[in-house]
Length: 573
Ligand code: FES
Image 1: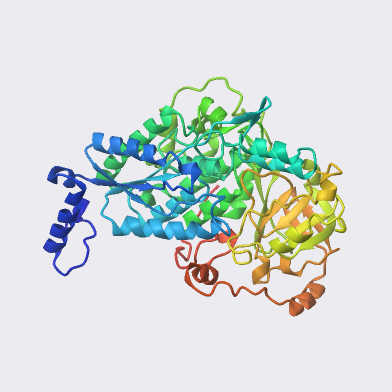
Image 2 (image 1 turned 60 degrees about the horizontal axis):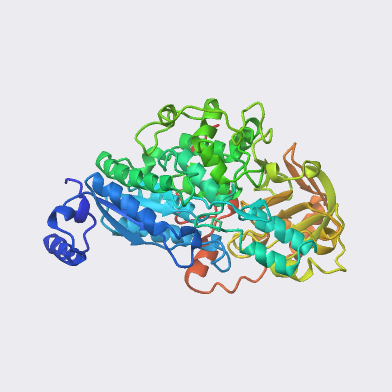
């Protein structure tokens, strides 16, 4: 049977296909379409505008530009809404809803008649959710993003969300900035529409998606308010019509080699640790395992090249002026799988060859003069993290990368909030702060709380960094000597649940170790006494689905029935 396309695709079941098509066309004519329009290839546009999502304020104009491109190429654009997630408007944390957005988007791709789709992502969890949906639905897909904000300024200092939000809030906690001033600064941190303009999770995911081949070249770094952003959207719309005709589905683009390219880029840009969790989930939808040993080996030979906050000094508009991601790819050309096919219809290498020539700039460093010698992320092993844990070295204090200290344990987010600023808290600058029950099930949703605040009494003494360990995540805009994603998490009985105040913990990043100095016999005794935390709030609906099925961080925190298992391949070096 010939493959059904356009309005004939995925007919609603009435037991009479002729009637189903007749009724569909009759209904959609109420939108004012002509028969000619309805006979064209249909390109869906996942429009993630939401009044609760300032990062997506420009989604409507991006959608208009995509529509223009689709129509110029002879297709019919049809936009549709999906769940839209913003970091600060999702209780208890946006990560809790990433899989829900992925399910919503995947099911719409399947339910609605479309021959290709362009998705408008942007804020942190949106792009991963869309990639996960694309991987599972396998409809020809292009991702575009709303793009980063421009920088703000305060008293002559350039400011960006949200690295400077955290830094300045830290100074407020330390008593160096008063309440009036921090309020004033709050009005200047987000001066335009768009996503956080440092190399946080949104920027990281945009760069990784371009490297993966699911975004047209040059799209990752264009600021939200620049005209090029709309030209890129228009080109994406036009290209989607071609992809529909070519049958260029995501499984042909998202190969193990393509994921390896995106992971290399994660390391070279000093990207957010969240990029690893998300791309692990996307790859897992295709039965591809992210090989953590290969990732760590990549990290040892891939320097951080991009001088952007939080690892460096600049902002996304600087990267765009320096040529965008292409400049980064060019500098690491020999480390990439150049023959990986991309959504442009060309390979990654061909895309790079077609880009404007290199010029002298300072944002993307040369390989012999990197921002940081090794890639941003190191994978840790040891008796405290039998699954794995990670640390972003490029944002950490080098002196703390080999450190032994006394554990100061917080049992939950609430416990931490209640005690962290207590003047009587028994804590010293060389202690190791431990936060547990903040993982995928424990918190729930693995919030970005791994950036444990420096206890106020230490902050006021000038302490700016300490070794911190948790089963939580950390915002891509944060920085510090922070060990994250400890697996298995405490709430399911991982060794983190057994740590007690005063235990000695050793972090040894050069040797990739994280060890709790307690004998196995003592740990066994503690395990026998351990009682799991009550997780009884998730009795119904999506919370119950999440609780019963969410995987650990080293598997991407996907729901187990959405991930494709067993793995059939691994990401190469
Ligand atoms: Fe949306 Fe930072 S809050 S990208």
